[in-house]
Image (cartoon, rainbow, N blue to C red; front, side, top):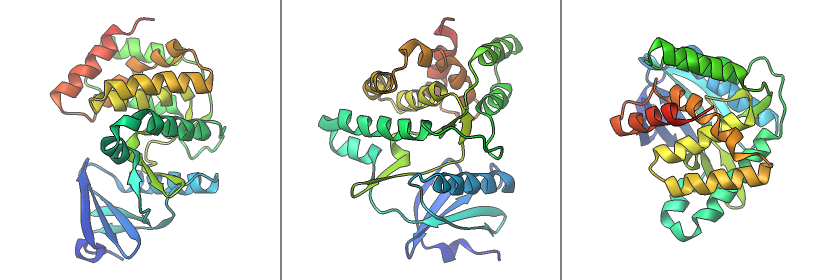
Length: 256
């Protein structure tokens, strides 16, 4: 049944061509059809449901339905504060919140998955590189770098940043499963590092990288080797010129 936005309750967040409403314990995320296809919305809902099946703390999926020309996912409302909000309110304890982020991520990455419904991370990154707008030589170089990276089959969130983790009491819930893949843990870490840099928090990014590598017993250079590749994948969607300049610097300065 096609619903109206007026039925969805209070509009409390609007970003990245999505509008998020809440009403009676239900959060509804409406995706602008000009940027998100029906299949991409269904895929995100499926990833979220699969995360729940694996025992991860994610909001329960209630339904997927049309809203006018758009598509929406209705999920359980999680009441609490995001790690991003807590870091902003309590900057003196930033390291504690980043430590929480790292622990959650390592828990996710400890799961190996052969679920064929989850795309391979390399396939997804290759697609974004193709659509990056970079010249053909640079795209070829990045594709070669990516192909040389080891193939792993860990459960990668793909967008794990402080604003996608909500603390409700002692429980941490993970949001936004659209970019979940099966792939290399260090690529997932490189993306989280990059997301912190793009938010302008170099200090948090540095603390994060050191903490992740220490807890996962990973050589920092191994994560850094992914940074140029994941930076290229963000060019397809980021329009802000300052952020694009950061991405382009990352692509050009990482040595192999």
